[in-house]
Image (tube, rainbow, N blue to C red):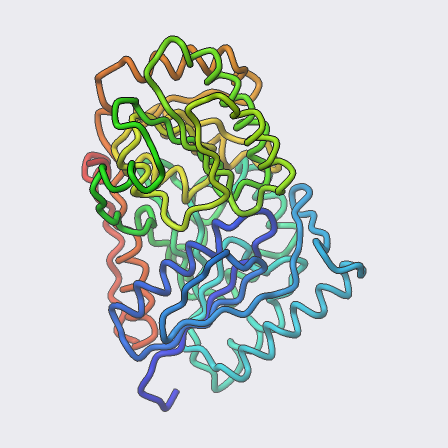
Length: 410
């Protein structure tokens, strides 16, 4: 395309939380740091709160959807049939691609888009006289492999990958989980190479512990337990059990808690948590833009097992107790299982995470002075941004040598 600036378009369907769009925005910010003057347009089904976009990045909000099962999506807010919503979303995406003319199109997670809404855009960008590079970005765990394979075959995802995509980027490490093999992508490695880019996470922002304690009003003589549920849409039961566990622990341990509910938790549920926290050394926060300073101060992090939150928690090098959600997919359970086998965290499934059991586990982990043997190296952000720039400038160099596991675990 005859212009000096690079145009990158990103798509994230966002039917349940904020993880997909936040990951894309993180990649976009790093890309702009590496290539000032480029332009990144992010299309997403969710608008993260307090989004502060630098020059060169903008976000187009698609009408909201809600995932209620594998491959099942419904309108979240509009009272229209899903076919109408598909037409609206698909039309917006296609129109933006026509006007913006991206050099690179990064598609997150769903190869054909929800309801196949990306197919017109993919076909357009691959038509004659277009030079767009189309990349599929996948977190390491999607769902149970047999479920994802069956759903992708039904949706025509494998055919779309073969016809339209230039590369597949896996946001993970092959030694931890062989995403390509497990999800049936190994057959595409000649036509559509798969590259494992490492875990994608924003770099830490160092803060002095005293400042964080003072800003939130914490007691420097008590160990901090940070409880977080990512976006928070389904985190209420886990957080309610953790609060009840604190009542068991209150007279036994010198602890305090910060519970970050998440921007998608209903205000009714947040208020219920605040009421339940009465009399406890616990702060309930609706949302914080950056969890890393709190993670750095915590003696223990209790978290669900979504990609962004868990990678940040494990990457902090702190003790982590993961409580993966039970649905609508197996993604969180698979990730927590894998990290647990590597000794990066401890795990409790929701059926075992009763207040009494949580109290015992939290108390044991806080008293155990032995830290995790390793932390997760999070170098994927740089690698993804660099690869996107290389593809857009047509100077891509194949480099898919995977480092050994001990290089991926610091």
